[in-house]
Length: 99
Image (cartoon, rainbow, N blue to C red; front, top):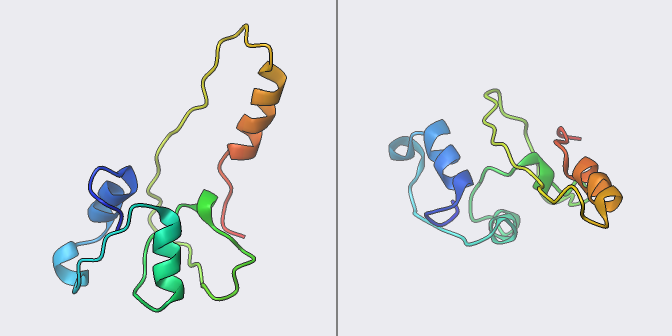
């Protein structure tokens, strides 16, 4: 699990009953730390689809039935000189389903 204060932690707690599934309370400050822990056999975790690294063959990603979600936004001034670049970035950051 991520440390307290991370929105993914709150979503995981809503999705899972911690009293049933958590034997050891391991916490991490980043998704990369969680990925490293899974890679080294220290449990399982939830991973947002935008953070999936399909080239990582040591980890198995499984789509879950329930679809927890969160909304994020990329915001900038209409007059920003690099609006076209920011539009492209917004398209790259858009939701991507599991590969």
